[in-house]
Length: 186
Image (cartoon, rainbow, N blue to C red; front, side, top):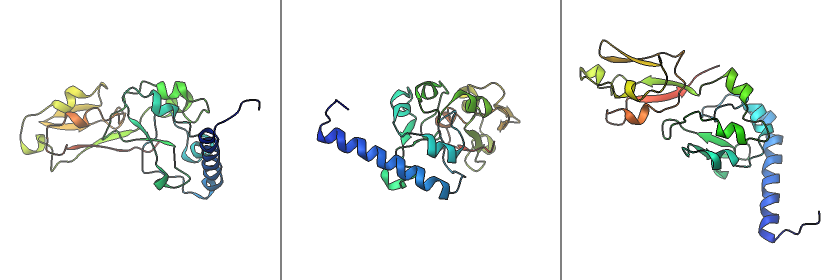
């Protein structure tokens, strides 16, 4: 190595290596089920944790700023790995995060196998349609044909077509939103 590193670069490089090592060491001991959303095109959780280099390029390239990185407080196995919450910041499935992922933790093959994050659940006690109020804002906001429709005045979700992008969530006029993206099993 002919290039000299300053102290900050040296510490940063060693910190990233240490976290990556700990993540790889601890991954086999972890439960493989997750209760959070990874970006589109993510491989299985165990493979993801051992493959992702925690470079943060997916977060940097996301035009919607939907991708965040787990903080240190989440533990060594998750720290600096990408996570998103479509209920807070919708995902447009632009695939830029997949294009920039050099370690293949996010890839097109995985995206084609599972082209969704989850699906939208309607909370009937908050939904205006279930309170006999005419409303179709969620249907108008939904970018996926056949994923969301109004039937007898209430929204109906097609779990087969819904991608869980979350674009309909902020369009909901109900107090606190009647829509929530939940995890969909493959």
